[in-house]
Image (cartoon, rainbow, N blue to C red):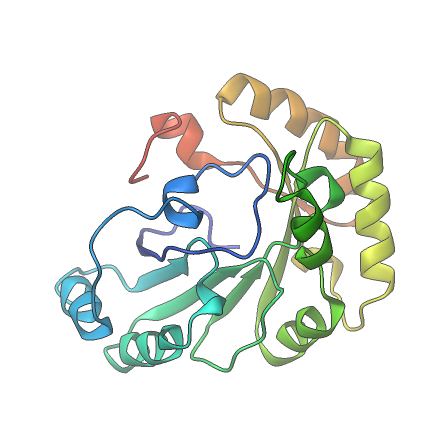
Length: 212
C-alpha cells in the first residue's frame, strides 16, 4: 500500500522458512552484520527525517525484542510496518501488518523441504493478525500462476474479513524483464477479483542489489 514511501528498513536475521526464491539469505539463514541492542537501533534511526520504518527480515515476528523495538520507534513518532509471513502472532506497535503467506511454489529442494512445507502456512495466527491490525496480504506469484492462484483463492475462502483491495499479487523475479513479463500475466486475475498488482520497484530502480 505504501510503495514508494521513503522508509528506514530494519532487517533482522533469522527465519523459520526457506523459500526457494528468497533474495535475502544473508538475513534469513546466513546471518551477517553486527549484533545490536534495540536502543542502539532506535538511536541509529532517530536522526533520520523519514517517518516510516519497516521491520523486516528474515522473520521479525519470531523474536520477542521486536515488540519493544516497535514500541520505542512508535514513541519517537515513527510509522511502523511489519513484514511477516504470517506464521507467528505477536502483540506490538504496528501501523501496517504486511503479511506475505507462502504458497506451495515457495518450497525449497533438499533437507528443508519437509519442514518448510509443514510450517509455511498456519491459518490461526494468520487470521489473528488480520483481525488485530491494519493489514495487507501480499502473494508472490511464480511461473506456476494457475496453481498459485488456485491456492490463493482457497486460502482466502477460509479466512474471514478479507477486503479484496487489501490483497496484492507480486510477480516473482529478480530482474526487470522477468517481472514485467510475469506482471502482465497477473493483470486479468487482479481485474476479475478486484485485487491489486504490485511490482518490485527497487529492482527497476537499482537492480538486484542490497540496501535498496
